[in-house]
Length: 131
Image 1 (tube, rainbow, N blue to C red):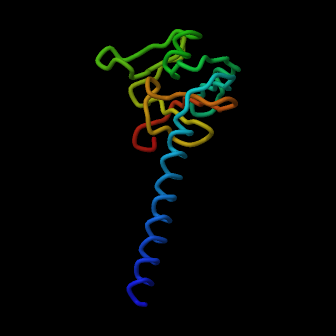
Image 2 (cartoon, rainbow, N blue to C red):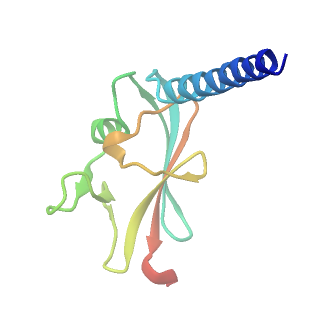
């Protein structure tokens, strides 16, 4: 009797774990899925909105591709994808550009970010060391 109960508990636990892993994998794949649509792009310095545009993107475009298609992206010559400006708006020595997607700090660079319809993408000029 105890052996059957332990086997049943083991099978049920295994199924629950398998379903959980399957859910996590599916959630990750869906969140990484490439699509097309429209995003809002905002460039802001400390106190001003410098650019506020709605942009259409294609499913295979990264944020880097979309920005280069629509603006003059100024990059640091030492690093291929390090953005230091858009059009005439360029950071100074005490600032950097941070990327936010839907008000959350992006953990990837513009060359690795695929967008979702209705995303709000902000590039913010931020000061080093809380200046």
